[in-house]
Image (cartoon, rainbow, N blue to C red; front, side):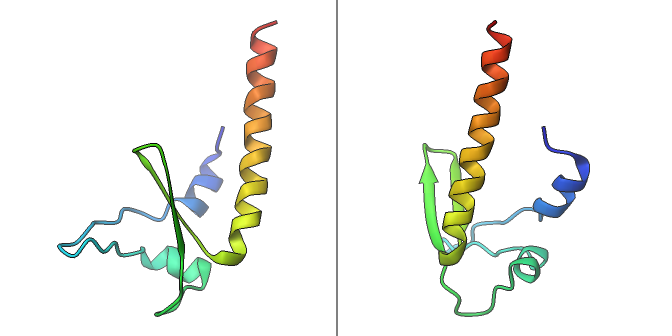
Length: 82
């Protein structure tokens, strides 16, 4: 479960897709991630409803974090099935 403090640190607002298919990254996200004009981001999709933007050097960190969260979720599910 995500605490309110964590939500405030990680939810930056909404992005709108423009006519040319471009999305604007909210200013707070650009500031926190130190994104500058011309920076390259990797773009991934999972299924049809999840899109992830990642700096190259952040991908390993994200994968590790996701793995930890999935382990926590599996632990909760397994405890509930006992």
